[in-house]
Image 1 (tube, rainbow, N blue to C red):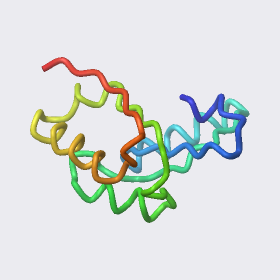
Image 2 (tube, rainbow, N blue to C red):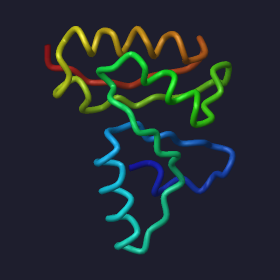
Image 3 (cartoon, rainbow, N blue to C red):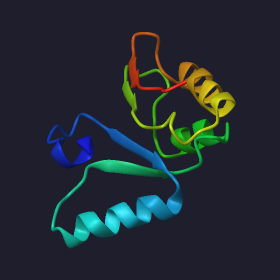
Length: 104
């Protein structure tokens, strides 16, 4: 998890996941006496509304960004993953980068 290693306060990290998984991660991080710099964004990436949640939590649409979707395609339906990639292109600046893997 990059948010555990990120020491640059100018770099904002957003963690998007189901609310219960974000809660579990936060509890395990606290129990391990670690600090994560992530802004937790509770959402379902199969739901197109995830973009609104991200913006609500402070993501700036015009900023250059890097997105990691590693491991996401394995649990989303193909149509939902395609919709997710389309949504990413609507919120990320054109000079941004995204990394993902897939098994389709």
